[in-house]
Image (cartoon, rainbow, N blue to C red):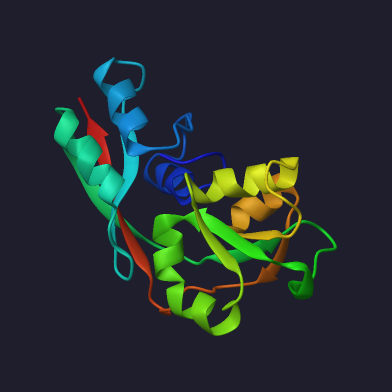
Length: 175
């Protein structure tokens, strides 16, 4: 689950460092590909210690039959990313996956009360779309540090999640 540079990609690399990671954006796509035999394993988040249940994953799990091979946690640190040269005074909107927005809600209320907060399909996809111009330059995205490196974005602020200990539980699914 997630685009290239996502926390789910990081989870997949952590679980199986020698495997090819296929970015499938959401849990429904992951479990559908698993069900069709297009992938051997699927990795997706199910719950975060701060943001709670990943609702889209629960809905996808209800649609497909699969086995849980393993569950494990990753320590999640969110970065506020912007296009190179963009300063905080230029930012008018913040976009990210709903879970990332939940995990950073107090930070956003405190430091970005006037910004338009917009949910996006995926943290890393938001970073990719900001870099490619799909999102306006006045948008900042909340995404992993790896997404900044991959898509050539600058980190405006590091570790913006509300809680110092911010863990996400991932499921490794198999048919």
